[in-house]
Image 1 (spheres, rainbow, N blue to C red):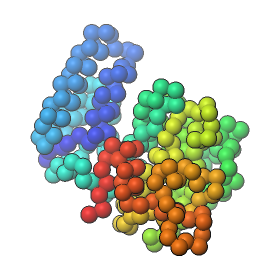
Image 2 (image 1 turned 135 degrees about the vertical axis):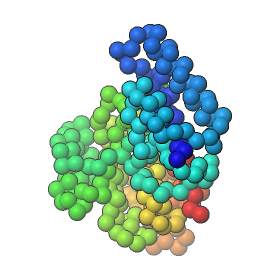
Image 3 (image 1 turned 90 degrees about the vertical axis):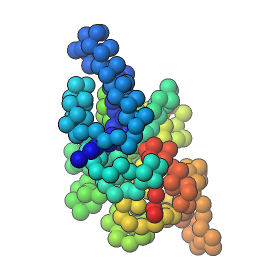
Amino acid sequence: MGCYLTPGGLRRLENRINKPNDSWTEAEMADEAKITRNTIRTIRQKPRKPVKENSLRKLFLALELTLEDSDYHCGQQEEQGDERITVSPDSYLYYIQEAVTADRVPTRFLPLMVSDINEIMSNAWRGIFTDVWERILQEETLRVTARKLICDESDDQRIQGLLFLGTGQDAYWTLDCLLETAPFNRYDRSARSFRGVGSALMARLVAEHTQRGFRLPLLLETSPRAMPFYKHLGCIVPPASAKPNRLILPQEAAKRLFAQVTDRALSED
């Protein structure tokens, strides 16, 4: 069966060229980079041409990378620009930016672990909802739907943001959700490590909503302090809303956000 690299898989190959292994010689690095660039060029010029899974594994192995499930898919090629969330949203890469250089940095969502409590309770991370996160960590029924945002293939392995996906089962499940950016990444901080962490958390929420089979828009509740952030994403106050802290993220704004953060198109059709 033919296989196809995803946009995330292509980016991992490209990033590997720019961040070679220290053990390689200069000649080996040049050869590997040339092979990878030629492969990427071929795949991009002929996106509907399938590649053998074994060939992909050999290519990634040559570059000392592990071929992840999110790097490729087998079967019929997906239509470009029209993709549904049919796999775990955790398998995608979500991009944030270095605050100083504005370089894009790939991140992943991983399950929140009991051992993470030490970092979350530390002075460096202690945030607005620290007590809530402590409770979530201690109760397994809550912890199973909690996620942490971690930089992918980076020396910085701090938790960049936290997301609780709630326990609700209907279309209003998002009202039980909670997201928090690490204190060193908040949009109102002049000296922060990364930008776009809040957007990545929201994109993951959009992906979860679609993966569960619900249609957009997304219904949210927030605090007055965070209102500017959500309005910046395109959230609006629902007509005749009796709750001033309740917002909706319209369909087009949600799709735009998801595409910006993941380089993927979102379709509900």
